[in-house]
Image (cartoon, rainbow, N blue to C red; front, top):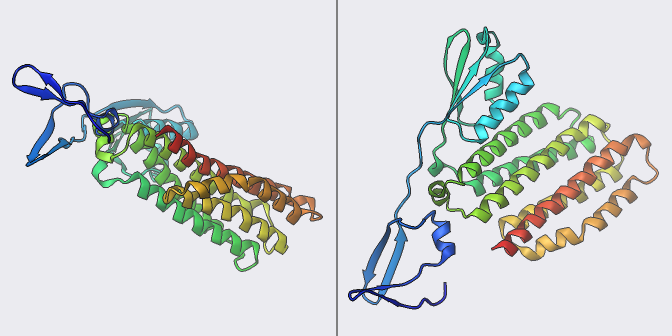
Length: 314
């Protein structure tokens, strides 16, 4: 942290300034109390453990008959950390099955009151001490790698139908992504950020990682919809190339390997060229497939750039 100058304060005390980065990382502000321990010639200063703010925040959502809109409204309320979500509408109990299906897309979101014909109440509470943003994104990544294996088996003719497996895995990635967004949004509260052991730069960094992992999963899931079972080997080779880019990008983030991140960005053009050469002369019906894997290459570059931006900001 470097050196600090001792400043006289009155006749009986001295003052040493605290590093701004340390203060912000621990969610402290002017007037807060810190813990001071004297150990012979060593002075230890630590933040007092912050408690999670469990005060209730409530939102009312009026159902207008549009289930897609309702899903988006619940997503907004969930990510913005409303603990109580009131769904109001005439005879809303009739769509209780649909509401249950929507809640399956979110972790820690439950129906707590369905006794009224015109109101359903949801509760969303997360214990931040049980959440690791880094580990959650690693789980998303592992599921995505498993999805890519399913797609490769389909493309190479080993599995004829992987749609159910892909749907289930992408659903899990979406749930974890929503949880990451919810947790990071709550991290703008300094006390919560201290519990999560993150600083402000980390909030934006992890948000970007989760976002692009979810976007890659969305592309991977859709490949079998627009591609024949057991395709020419060139298409499998092109898929391998873009997924290698993705895995290298994620590895660079997990181990903080900046040189590997730079390598991923530098290889983007080379991978584009490989995609073009692999698909050259093939049936034009594969054009949608080509665009999907080109987009994955783009997103992999964005994942690598996220790490480089974090290094610059810090």
